Length: 349
Image (tube, rainbow, N blue to C red; front, side, top):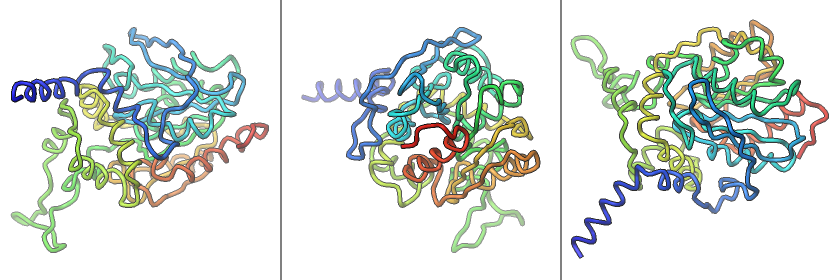
């Protein structure tokens, strides 16, 4: 019995690193049906990047429908967009892809950074959009950074490929300085609501400690304690158990090496005024309870787009970092409005 138990434990530990185990984390079934995998199989579109990495790219819905391209964030995958795929694929063509190294996409050999994010998106758009076809492009978190990087690197593609853009819970840089995902990161230690000082300075978590926690390539543990921490730091108290389990499962499914390499790269990405190249109507949505990329990190993008005249709307919701999961109905309604404004002849749900 002891030998069998030890073998089971070893298999569980090894299983946490296997592709089938990770895929299982992304494909669980929930009482909340919008979180479940689409019932209709996707069209699988073969895409290879400039360095030869193969990306997993899926297209759902009618081939002749107006196109929505959904670009996920750090440690996520195509499945992160299940609430939107399920809501829109009956009448729109919904294109999603695993960013390199995420989900089932290969990591490749290029350095991770703004250029690789931009190049991969450009390659996906070339493979999924017909000549002269434009799409509503939606980026969450790192996906929003991807859109800004793409616009700066390929400004001639923006109006040719995009009819509108939605940036959700994202930033243009300064992740190292402004993220508050860890309790002591960029905020002082307090006792009885008073900052703790040492030699006249407030005590903060050293940068190298915070970055080590975020970038070390080790699997995320499961179980209630880890899930509770995830909810407290990434979502809000209003998030349902299904929403937390769904989002945490998707994040846990990310390969540790991918999570670590992208985290290490993203803290150094500085996009500056890259959003000035988003020369189509752009909607920005931030979360007032977002610790990972606080609402304040969206403001430079808002200021840039206000200056260029392409800010369509700026909304601050009472959500954490996962606005499209925590407020699915509201997000889907807003996305429908964006699509209708960009394509008045589109078929509304």
